[in-house]
Structures are given as structure tokens and as C-alpha cells.
Length: 320
Image (cartoon, rainbow, N blue to C red; front, top):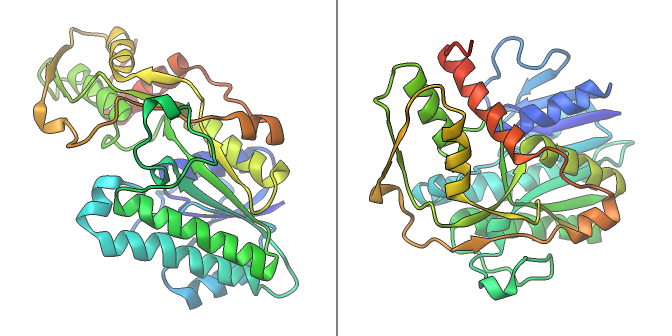
């Protein structure tokens, strides 16, 4: 199968590329011109420097790649960054999707399947008594990132209905694992512990609110879900990608601290608190389990151990 991944240099892009290459697919990856993958990034991957906001550049590169499946992962994927640069988030996440969909819909001689990756941020605040959150829950985004993903989803449905392009839609909840940026909570914890082990940080780490519960899925399970939706899901339908099990942030911290090779102290930092933080946020994975046969396979204990080992390797921490 000939596959194309936009945003291949990103967190999920790497793991999706690895999975597809491992099963023998031909994979082309588009990366943002300013963030090329390092040498040896994914052996066998064909990379192209493409700004998806440039419709003509995207069309020419996509038509040359001639994929059977397009996984559109390129996005401004950080809520904080979307607040700092609303225009960039809206342009990249909406107009970037437009470039990809228009190029796919007009591709000569091919009708590729397209996966658009949305977010649980589309739901906005949902009261605990209405959780776990199913796909029919009202969308009420409260940040530019969530708004851009709702707009992307409506655009995808428009192309599905108006051009019969097989557009598949997912809303991903929190995914964690090796290679995740330390701006996200679990990776921040692991990164700080690895810094302490490496002697680059005093033995005290800073954390924010530990009393919230979030729905975490290993990124390797998440990208497996993306493949399952494209291969077995219904075009035009939306699927939550989540574990369906909320986990206390304090438990994530405790598990990681228990894996540390030295003493680690924890300091609560009020600056790390969000202005508004829902006590629990959990998705309903029934639809993707029943219709696509997908379920998470990687236990959170392994995910956290692998995440900490990733940061140890990045910082040159000896583990034996």
C-alpha cells in the first residue's frame, strides 16, 4: 500500500511511519520546511519538504507521490501555542486540511482514502455526569486549537458529501509515549526525572495540578487506531480514539518517580496550573472497538517506562 503522512516529523507521525514501514507499506512523509527529520529518522521513508498551507505545493507533491491512503497529521497541535498565535493555528489546521483534501479530490486516476485527525478539545468542557464522552456529544470548543479542529472536521465532511472522497475522521484524546515533547504532562515528568538522574537538575521537580483525571492512550496504540479506522471504519463517520479509562495525574507521577534511579522530590508550582482545569475528562471508545476492532494493547506501566527510557537515552543517562 502506498501511504502518505503529512507532519511525519511530529510525535504521532514518527510512530505511524514506523508502523506502516514495519508492515511493508511504501511511505512518503511530508515535513514542514523548517523542521526536517534528522538523518536516519525512519529507514525506508521517502521525505518531502512541503508546507501544507501552500495549496499548489501540496497538490504537486501529493500527485507525484500518488498515495492510496493519506494520513493528515500536520497541525499546530498545542493548545497553548494556539492561544499565542491564533492565526497560525487556524490557517495550518483548516487551510492545511483544505490543501490536502482538494489535492486528494482532484488527483488524476486515484481516489485515495484520507484520514483527518481531530481532537477531544472539540468537545470543550463536559460535566462529569455526561462522561465518558461519546461521538454524539455536542461540540463546544473553548480554545483556538479546538475551534480549528471542528472546522477541519466540517470541511472533511463537506468533501465526503460533495465529491464522494472517502474521508475518515477521528477525535484523539491524550496520547503519550516515547518522543513526546516535554510540554505535555507525562513527558514533562519523565524529562525532569531524567534530568535529575543526569545531574542537570537538582533533585526537585516542579508539577502542576495532580488531582485531575485524563484519558491516556499509548501513542503506538493511537496510530494503530488511525490505521484501523482507515481500513475498517466508515467514511464520513467520526471515531473517538481513547482508552475509556481516566487516570489520576498523581498516579502518572507516582509511577514515574518509582522508576527513578535516585531520590526525586516533588514541588507543586502554582504557575503550572491551568486557569480552568476540568476534574475529569474521559472518552467512550465503544464505537471504534465495535466497528473497527481496535482496542489499546499497551499497558500504561510500559508506556511510562518507555517514555522515561527515551528521555534517559536523549540525555545520556546510564541505566545499568
